[in-house]
Image (cartoon, rainbow, N blue to C red):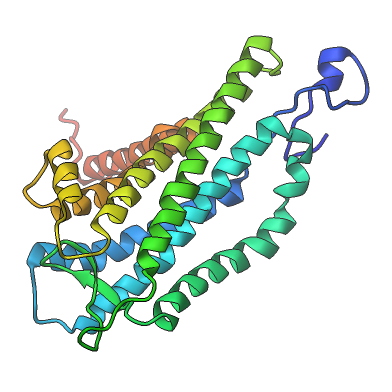
Length: 311
């Protein structure tokens, strides 16, 4: 029997082979989840070491070049993260709608061959657009709590193409929304499979459902964040649409504050979903803390003076 997928046809119908009418539920691809986690970890580390620090400290004595470099890293990691969320949604969708093609599409060879090259190609292509098309230099501004598009170097020069807006529309409105649609379709299919009781065990269904819900929990806040990015348009001006968005959210006086907090919330949610939807991770972390606690107790007991027997 294949390791990446579990076929139940011969178990359900008593045959020694399977047919396309049988339902197979493959396990999730650990490579996709691991890569997505690493990309999100790099993004969170970048924000923690630079943008969060300069925002909280409100320092202005650093070179503007650092803000531009930080912006380049952000727009290199963000499309990679977006691509991984889409890939995970397609992974879950394929596992329930085309289970017999799952192993061929999401094989280890394909991941090793195409995934690194694809992510690198996405990051390089996005960054090249900012430098090839004029008037698209941007960077992080601590005073505006967000990434802003710098003015054109020549007075009166018009921006021929807004690269950041293109990224926000394509990634947020099209791809992230498409990933949410795929997740909803996957949940619907899982519900149908559960009613037909074509899973070999309840544990198999729970695994599929948990991973799909984890994908939904990551895609929805990311979609909201990118919609706000599209509204702000990387501009220092607050339009009436931004004021409406701020009023509906009702958090702070400036929409840039709202955007900054929502971005950090998305990073936090991406990391905590691994803990929330995976009991194996919770068990591992709890076991680690228990071992640390036991070691401290053992060490403290060994430091105590031993009682002497008095005869």
